[in-house]
Image (tube, rainbow, N blue to C red; front, side, top):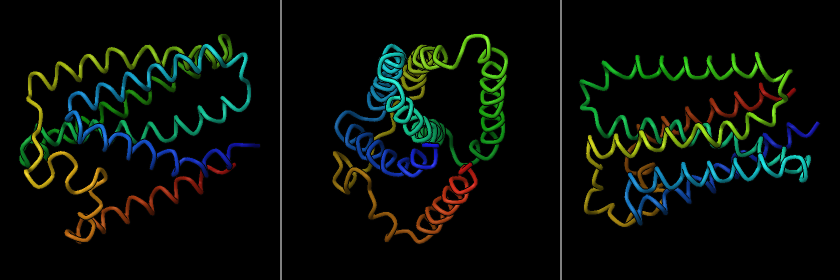
Length: 195
């Protein structure tokens, strides 16, 4: 099937999405960048849902690549927001429960898909995904309004260190090693996903 090829395209889609988000982040700030990226994703998913019956397999391929990329990106956006709001001590306390709630979301989504995919088909879930992003975006907007928007350091403002800020990999060896661990884990996860 086409799934291995789609999975092989994920790093390229992720790189494009991360760069686009970094560019947006540099230009409009964290709150607007987050909500704009969520609304753009919602629009993409909604249009994909409308066109699935007409466009066929290539759009299904693109949706798989997008989904595999977006789930990583949005998770990182959530954690970035949480870590910008919490102090180090609070982060140690709250990261576990937040990760647990995230897992419950995955379980609930999997249950809905397993329960209704046979009777409804999978196409309606693309439309549902487009819809469910909207309250999440609204909650993010409210969260940023309540917690305040993190401000970049003077040497980072406006993308001065690049929209991806890759220089941090040479500035901080710990971050480099963490990036390598994450990269390795993604390679393993992708390799295990080839069926």
